[in-house]
Image (tube, rainbow, N blue to C red; front, side, top):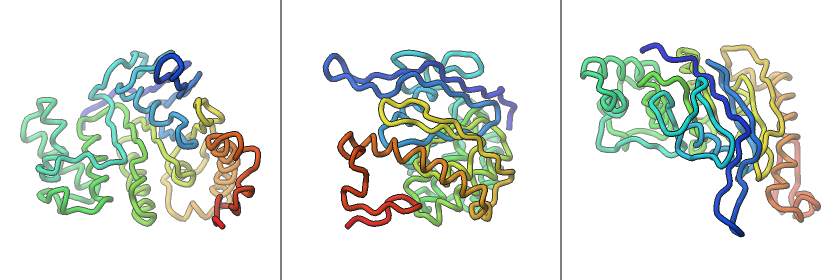
Length: 286
């Protein structure tokens, strides 16, 4: 793999407004955040708070209404190879083999066939998928497809990796395994990661820091440092330190989730709508 830059992401005074005149929607307002070089940072918050919009701005897909995003002190104005992106939906080319999918970005960058082959096979081996290099995507499970998506994003040696709920479509058991695989891969490369998720436990397990966003218009409500040692292992999720972070984040997010549902629900609370709220959130709908 080639050397990459420092990977400092900075979002400054960010605002995003969709629509015009009476149809305007303020999606994001006055957001400041950063991802230090080699750091893993998650964004969590209620649905519609602007998490994916912020990631799309850093990716160069969306232009902000105010403020700016910078990578290594250079304003982000368009997509670039220095930013790898992984979405929730599998974005593999069904007509290409697994190895050819991973090679695709390198081919577009002008790498020769030998370099493409060596790099793709090294990455597939790291992800435990080398035995499937000649298979096609429709022959693989969802977790395997997403692993391919991750290593394909890493193939061109980006400075940062942007991930928008990459495990959201997976079942619980596969999701837990994918979290461990991702941490192992990340520790090999130590590039900057901005990760979007709705899952509190996932954000804690993966991250060095977590930004909690408010209901729309999305602002930064809190910044939480995750002091858990690395490498992260599944047994950490049962420790008092992990559970304390879970409870802290749940307390921060619950009020914003109610606010996102509207003022009537916020004033009455979930119990007023026939829902029992326990330590892990909504447990039962009557």
